[in-house]
Image (spheres, rainbow, N blue to C red):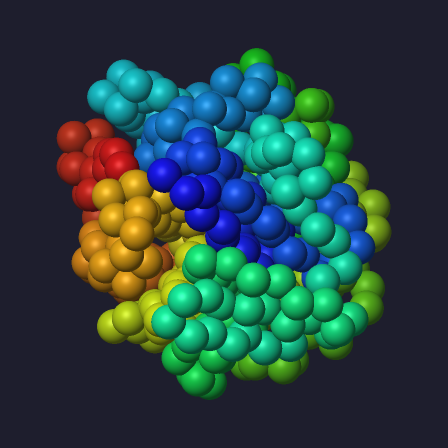
Length: 386
């Protein structure tokens, strides 16, 4: 078989995992990343059982387990610290064969990057446009260079240039909340490092959570209901977080206080309406470029990993018919990712409630929910294996 060439635009989780999956099949792969290097800036990423199983198939799960932190404790509490849910993480781990893990996103990217063949990733390459005909597809970059391949994968995130060339412009949807996230070193006897995991505290229109990240670090996040544009210009992110979560369940303020301003990120959170197709000719989409979703089910990274495996298998089945491979890929992946996008929105509404009566009803339901129902409720997400 003549070796095929794949061009991948974007060197994040989606692009690197797709490159690794295709290299396993013997494809020549080049990943074009607009940044000049792998960035050491990011947040924690949760990898639930479906993500870990995908990483096993890519051959990197053991490294992730070694560097990341298993989630062996996960609580949901009220704003004043009363326990709502003790997530049955041990039962889930037994059922699915693995714990969930939390890892620093740049660490995960480094693991994937180092597994690729040398010089697979080419930095400093900003895509300007793509051109294609029946025989090939060409990527044209800002520096004037061009690259030709048998197919092109847009893994360039929520603001994807490849998506614009395939689909056209589609509006983003503001979630209704802004996220402030940080990474720190923090000790609390209630959440020992050897257990991993942590807690979330849900209050009216805001929530806070923290979890162990591995390598002695913790990751914390908050989601705050705000009209679009009201918090994004804040420069003192630490002060804003402390003011928002003043007088709340400890150790929330102590966790924020332990964090350097330079290690705190602030982002408005968006998704997009699900699409009916992701491909055009020899180009297709993967990860956030295809299906940007809210973080409320913790599935952004997991769905990108699932995409990478299904796309590679589709190309393995139809090595000489890119369009047919893309049809198979979309047929398998679009229904699932559409369900996850919608499920993440529904979960956001539940988590970010402001009405006191609605909150009381939600909390009553959560307190009375048996472990078996908790597990069944999310089995379609984390129990899935590609």
